[in-house]
Image 1 (cartoon, rainbow, N blue to C red):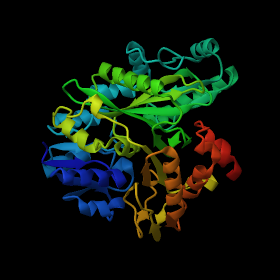
Image 2: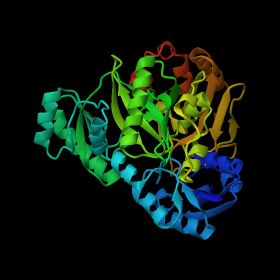
Image 3: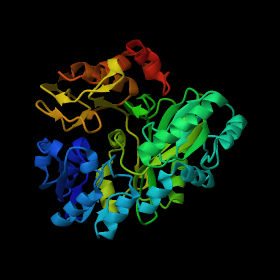
Image 4: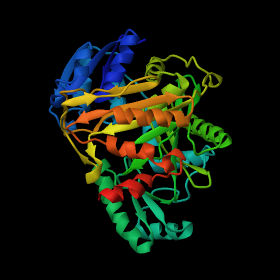
Length: 450
């Protein structure tokens, strides 16, 4: 087992990894930017090293600075968390070439599954159903027009290296398709330095359901059931829950087995998430694989009792999974909401600044993951999420009631947050009855505030 791990991230996930390391008897080294110098979690690590100025391009995205910090502090491994360099295959290679273990999958798996077109090919080979669309990258507009005509409008244009909704466009007809192809390619090239796109049939009234998997380097793999991440804004998740209230048990088992076939075909190890879209008839189709720990992983931890961060560390250390599929039982219902420093009434505009009043809720079955506190200064340089609030109850109805109570208790000021919107969501009858899709928030709430 490792004696010292460097955490190449910030915020609540950095704090989470520090705490897990301490419980495992492993020393932690945290890297930080100038903007995070006074963050409370920096003081909790055994050692902290500044790696650059506030912008992520000068700090958390500087792999050379991070490797140098790792070498100076003599660590055995690096945990990338999520975001930043977590799905960067070159960084994984750099770590291992420097004789430092990357706590995540192989660089080969990251490259294969990070390329959405290649991942779709692999999915089809592994007998995992994919959304109808182009077999590969769409090279020119005429090819796109031909494919779209065959599968029928509306269609979705997606960036091969995309994420977070960037490089993604909907086209209702041929004219829109030609315009949106240009826009999608330009946005993808700017965001990912890769302007390639592919075409898929647009699934109307979709739900977003994903399967958590865990695999070791000895050929063992298992799933930890699914999470429903349907409630989103701009393709960014706001509410996650498990089990999904929208799928039947037979579908659930088939989807989880499909996820395992795919990651096994990719020779994948570590924690990962296989994402699916589910149509209004309950048919599910493969979307993509996230080759890292996800923001919403605590939902799975609550219903299974498995510490996923700890499991990732054991796998990276070459250990076999101690659990078998029959050991992974689901217990009750868990829901997570992301608290973002954003103004929902003004197009989710980021709201950096100083928190003066911070009173999170608590009580039975409540978990709160956050690095924020009264007096904390939210910097303008990074993702706006400042907390994750979770509840765990025997039933979904009880979990909704608990979360609604927690949101009513939660006080953060003077910054704007997504809490008022979340309060409305948890009191809405359509959410209670799970009559939702990925467009629910924009359709039900955002139009009223635009």
